Image 1 (cartoon, chains in turn green, purple):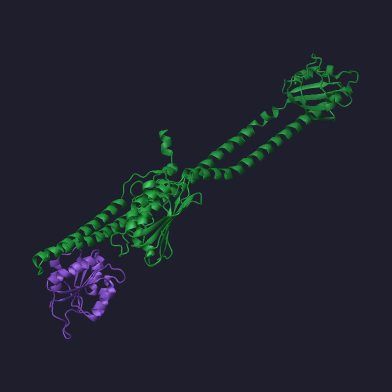
Image 2 (cartoon, helix red, strand yellow):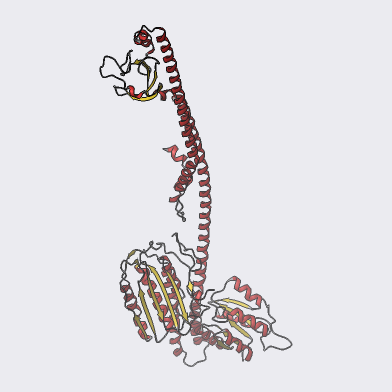
Length: 500
Length: 136
């Protein structure tokens, strides 16, 4: 067992390798190569051997038959001549009784004489005269001599050589067991078999060696490829973390400096100020500082959401329920801004399943994004269609200010935020994008400046795989999920009406 | 009257507060919120010092810096940004910025950078204050 394990090539359990992205089954590949090559290499050999086998058999058969026939013929001739010299003796068997007794050596060489009725006249192993029914069917002997197949009374298949003795009603018969021939050519057959076996073993060994070498090479290059991929993924992850860090720094530095300047101004007012009543100015300044702190808080909260460590679980989800939950969260805000929310009748999507919290977050982000874009007055529309059996299409559109064609390709990038939206740190859409990609879905955006924006997301009805559970950062542009080992990440990122 | 200072930053809250603080320090400061307005302001009322943010919608700080240095090389330009890399810093200094600050900035440091350097008086046609490339 241990030695077998050691003999196993490295690729044998390749399919179970942790980093096997391509789903390559090298074991199967190896087996296929060995099988096909073996069939190709061995079939001509086996066919040739079979042909040779048959040829040899036929040659030996013909040769032995001819020999038997010749000897019978000669013997019959001698007997006829002998009988012709002794015309007084009418029964040949008396004359030849002793000779036949000597010649008849047993079941494999049963030599005897029969009369016209088929009765043996000399002792026969198979046709004992004492047995009344033991008659040979002489109708089989159609010619003066020949070889026919016979069934003896005791049930043995025999080869019967016969030769009529001219001038007498007697026929000389020699019986040989049918498989007697086989023994005769057993030796050459064994030789052939040996040759065949050794050749097959040698060919199989070399094929297996070659296949092992080839597949081993494939395995090695596959290994290298995976390693390179890992490397790239790692570098990508580092770059994304760098982008994230610098984005956070920037987004936090701005409100920090507001706090810095506002409090500085408070101090200035109290120390340098020439105003009579600086106290009146302090309150709005303090409020501004609090606002800036709130802004910092929003950023850090979004950051936490971005690196969320929620345990995702795929479960059947009622889209309508999730949407109404989200709308309950944004309703007040929408009401304050005089924004109407329209939800078209939501069709039942049987069997829809996904990570509920992710879906909630996606809708919340899109709804908040839409409301922010409209500022005041507008219509937020949500439509759901499940016409296709394998995916759900959800459209979230607003009548807001729209996104300019230059900005459109960048909206899913982290920390890309339109500057008029002072409270968004620009993580919302990046998170949304990452979540949708995790679910195996896609999001597209169309926007007309001044008219509004429409996000269309498609989600698979059946979650193809659970979302990465390690709080993966899916950053657009990187293509590879950051901090995630999930397979089959869809490439090609964002579809926008205008690409960079 | 003190130095004429033009502040350019899209963070209105921030830039207005900073402007007020500079005014309290006897400077004639004025705040605008984007690059285009800033350039127009430079053309109509050229300041002696400019404080520019890098990341702004439309025209960014580096573009403003480049144009200002082309038309008014004597204006001292101070970069004040929340998102500055070493790379950005090098570009700005090569373009002729006289100082580069990362937000949040200390008002005294900023004050020192504004007042530092040769000639704080109004530009003289024969003796421009700064031809660019002034190292801090």
